[in-house]
Structures are given as structure tokens and as C-alpha cells.
Image 1 (cartoon, rainbow, N blue to C red):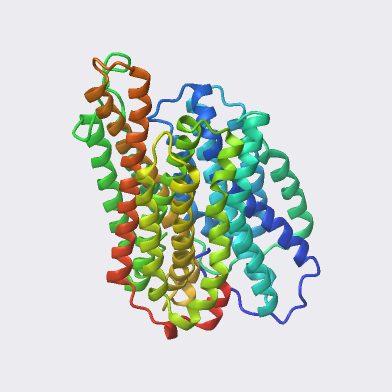
Image 2: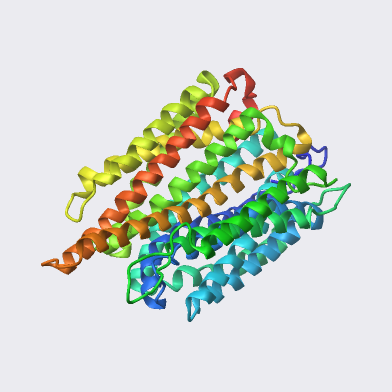
Amino acid sequence: MSSLEPPVPSSEAPDPKRWLALAVIAVAQLMIVLDASIVNIALPSAQKDLGISDADRQWVVTAYTLTFGGLLLLGGRIADFAGRKRILVVGLIGFAAASALGGIASNAALLYSARGLQGLFAALMAPAALSLISVTFTEPKERATAFGVFGAIAGGGAAIGLIVGGVLTEYASWRWCLGVNVPIALLAALAALRFVRESKAEGDTKYDIPGAVLVTVGLASLVYGFTEAAKLKDPGRSMEVMGWTAPGTMTFLGVAIVLLVAFVLWERRTANPLLPLRVALDRNRGGSYLVFLFVGAGLFAMFLFLTFYFQATLGYTPLRSGFAFLPFSIGIIAGAGVISQLLPRLGPKPIMLPGLASATIGMLLLTRVTADTSYWTHVLPSLVLLSVGMAAVFIPASSTALVGVGSHDAGVASALLNTSQQVGGSLGTALLNTLYGGAVTAFLTDNLRGAANPKQVAADSLVHGYHVAFFWGGMLLLAALVAATLLIVAKKDDIPAEDAAAVA
């Protein structure tokens, strides 16, 4: 995930502690992956406990994903220049402190701040962990094994998070979904000091701080603009929301546009860009980043609204909700093994397009759910289609994101893929939560007055909101399908065999 050249095989003897180092790195990666899914299960309980509004609840998710995605490129540079082991340890200790702060949060603002700090330290940990694997395992077969372990953690971690989040929320408290990170991160930091070998990049070590500030603040302003649109004008007295034309909404969206345009202009002129534009402007790579952006936007929101559907509408416990998501995680893990074998034979596009079509259909099928439909007939088929589709997207898109990239840009090209998904998740969650809030408000306004059963109308309004969110989530996945169709032109011969093996 660094922006520098990947390491070349070394003539030095292999690190005798390299497999213990891999265990430490895997734990760090597991915490990052766990944190995204474990908090989703805990969110309904946290929202109720802290009195968070429906419009603002998405900040529990986006405060993390936004800082993580926005600072990931800079985090890779810092890890390369300051020392990957050192930054991994700093990230682990900081992540533990931020998790502890979130676990004792007494109000929503403190929880949002803690989640943002978690994202910041995750942005240091993630690129440091991936770079350490590259420099620790220089023999091709061992490196393939190490990356296989890393990939399995990334794929299976989400499933573990769903179950652990359910257990902790149901039998302890939602606060332990954050607090559980503290002992794990601290023990991993101590193990890293003992077993991980330090490595550092040489040469130019200048940071693009202005670029990092412009893109992060610009994206935060964009998300906040979406959130403002969903806020009530007069809470407690009226269900009318601010809307897209409210002065506050337009101000934040306008500031976001100015800052993001300024970021692009700055990256064109600075000598040490955070994001070399040549990386993103290539047709295949740019198409891959757009695919991950749209997929992240739709997928993160799917987890959010299905969680509330399971718990608020169907009455599932947090643990049962976690198990309800398991088919999705299992489908991705199982599908990944098949797709990795098909990629060298078929090439990326013949796999990616059917995958995106499958995921789009799966998301749109969720618009059929009601307060009394069966999980097995209405939710499970959608999760299967989504999981198979995502397996057919993640692996090919990860490959095309590196097609034709020079060795000097290989790290930043990889980091940008992760950044696209995290930023997409932030924007998608904020946007779809805003559309959800507007749909619920409109439904209540149209149906609540004079209703014989106000409680039923309120319950129906939530389901209507889910339908709107799932529909637009499907449209985001459809946008990813259009981007892949128009932009991805790489053939199977364009993807080196070693790249396919690494992705697998």
C-alpha cells in the first residue's frame, strides 16, 4: 500500500521469526476488518442507548470509513518513511486507545470522535501490515502463502465480526464491541516489538500534507451535506426534513466541491502528490476504482439497513442478526476460490459483468421484504446473489486496478483501491441514510394523519424506507456495472500470472 517500489527478492537469509510476525500482522488486519462488521450489529443498541437520531446514526459508520479511506494513502507514505514496524505498533496502540474511548462514550459526539480516531489509526496499520508482508516474505511460494493467510483474514473477518458483535451486544453490551479491541491490540503491539523486523523506504520522503487535508475535509463536508439534508426542520413538531435545497445542505455540498476540485488541481502541480493522477486516469485502473467506489457505496448501506430490518422490524436479537448475515460471508469465501481459478482462463471482464449483474439483482430483490416475509424466501436468496456477485467483482477488479502500473506506483495503486471502497462506503451510507430518512418522513406525512393504527403506520414507514434504500443501493451497483462495461478493456493476457496468484 505504499507509493514506493515493491521490495525485490533479497539475498539475505529469511527472517527466522517471519511466521510469528505474520501472526501479529494477521491480528492487526483482523481487527480492521472486524471493526466494520461488528459495529453494524451493535449500532441499533448504541443508537437507542445514546439517543442518536436516524439522520445522524450513519456517522457511527462513516466517521470510521471516512477517516480510514481519506487518510489511507498518507498512512502508506508515513509507514514507508517512518518505519513500517514502528507505525504498525503506533497504529495498534492508538487503535486500542480509540476503542477504549468509544467503549466508554457517554454521548454521540464522543462516540463519533472515537470512531474517527479508530479510522485514523487503521489508516496507519493497514498499509504498514501489507508492506511488512512484502518485505518479510521474499520467496515467491512463501509470499503467496502469506498473502493467502492475509486474504483469508480479510474475507473471513467480516463473518467473525458479525457473530462476535452479536454475542457481545446480546450478552454483555454494545460497548464491548469496541472495548474488545483494547487487550487484543495491546498484546499485538507487544508481540510486534518482539517478532516483527523493521523496514523503511529510502529516497524521497516528502509528504503531501495539503493534499491529504483537502481530500479528507472535502469528503467529510460532502458526507455532512448529505446528513444535513435528512435532518428534521423542527424536531418533535414536524416531520419535514431540511432537504437538498436548505442553505446548510447547499453550503456543505458547495464547500465539498470546491475542496475536491482544489485537491485535483493541487495533485497536478505538487512534486510529491498524495495521488499521482497518472494512476487514476488509466482506463482500466480508473474503471476499477469507480467499480469499487460504487460497490462500496451500495454494500456498506446494505449491511446498515439489513441490520435495522432484522432487529427493528423482524425483532431479531443481535446474535441472530449476526448469523443471518453469515450466508453472505460464506458465499464470498467459497466464490473467491472458484473465481481465482477462472480469472487466468477467462480474463476479468467476462467474470466481473455477470458478478455485478447478480449483485444488482440481489440488492433489488430486497425491495420485496415486508414486516412478515420469511428470511429464507426473501432475504437468503438476495444474500446468495450478492455474495456470489461480490466474489466475481473483488478479485477481477483488484487485478485490473494494477494493469499496466509501473513499479514505482504499484503501492499507491493498491492503496487507492482500498480507499475507493472505504470512501464509497462513507458516501453511500450517508446518501442512502438521507434517502431513507426522507422516505420514512414522506410516508408518515401521507399516512399518519387520521390513521386507525398509528403504530402500524410507523412500522410500515420503516419498511418503506428500507425499500427506497435497497432500490438506490441497487442503482449504485448498476452504476458499477455500467462503469465496468464502458471502461474495463483488459484481457486475460494483460494480467500476469503472478498477479492472479497474489489476488487468489
